[in-house]
Length: 409
Image 1 (spheres, rainbow, N blue to C red):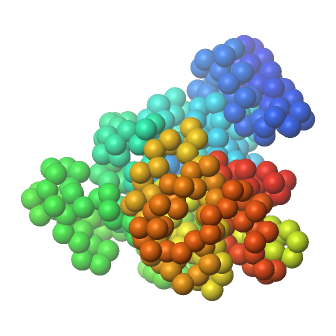
Image 2 (cartoon, rainbow, N blue to C red):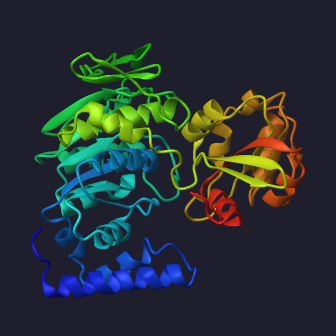
């Protein structure tokens, strides 16, 4: 790789020092502060760190941290990979990740949907993975139609190879201006944000996985890759069993996207798939922690689409603890709780906690789901009999629970 200019070297080194100090003092994992320090000293640091690397950017409303981890695991077969493993998905996090692995020839960066155009323009990434778009943190992010429009503009005229989920009409529209697109039928369980055509505003007709606009020519492209139950079907029609360790249909969809990205880097499926099977948890997601004979499995869910996938993974025979906050990273508006169908929880013990537990309690009351209100997660866990329990929490609630158990990964 080309050596960085002296100013960029200094900025990168001081950023790494700040990150190390943050970790040593217990103030954080250093994945953001290091990048902020580096960018303060050299505003063009991200562009310079990205130069000469083969980069993939991963963006979606749900699943981008997991898919980033899966792609990274696969590409490690080729060599060292720089990645923002803990989800710091804005430019400061990208700078920190690339600085920490300054000699890595490959990079896989999770990117916040809103920042994707900026990061693409800055890094010139050769591969981009786009999976889904649904409403999330509406007080911070834009309407998802506007996000998809920004993606279209950013990709127009770029040589970037896009791997895109053609089952999501908004993702399809956002990716369709790219010079090269590999379409993946990764599935779309949550459809409530995409009943209208993003091209003309007309109604979308849906039949099984297929969709098409009733008013214009916009329609679902023919996929090269597809997910069929527990198997991936590659562009040559060969079927590969996805016996990965991460649970649920959403993670099988993530795995198909990861295989398509790996192939874009020149890695055949037979080499990539065993690497995907090595991933057992992602930044605490799906980890089981234990206290006083109780085994709690941690599931992260940040929005209605995410709750739908979490319910798919949760064991209906087990009690369940729900925890909701509304801090800055979560979005302060909890009205999205009314878009989640909680009736699936009827008949099982439900415990509600978190800073916005009363908001969630009201929603459950309307859905006629009996529950027990708890002041803290510790109290909720102590009320469980010995054995297993599922925990679904949104972002800051999830991080607080992880902290109680030493941020298990």
